[in-house]
Image (cartoon, helix red, strand yellow):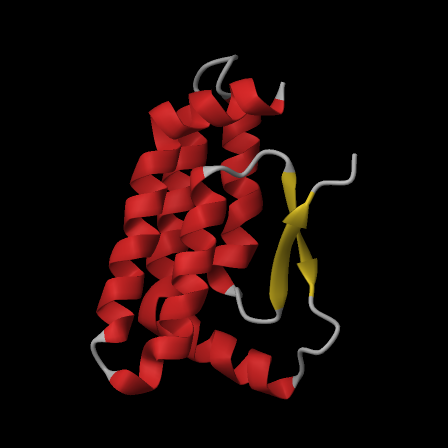
Length: 125
């Protein structure tokens, strides 16, 4: 079932969110100081492309640095990506078959705003 949901997700929303994260990552590579945020963006691009069957968990080693980095992330790219997930979620929820994908898009909003200190792992269920 996860594979079917992922294929539907890629066709209708995954590719556009993937491109948004990749574009943000490329733009964040331009100034050298923001390269750590670019790596986070590329990691999230992978998750946004194929989200079903994976979970986001807090990293046990994250601390104040992650919080400060997330604040900078929100200013640089996070709020644009969060708006993209919200718009995608609303559009997906307009159809009955799109509701699971809409819920997945809404679940990505918090990680699009605060990606540092998080880890993407395979779902255990």
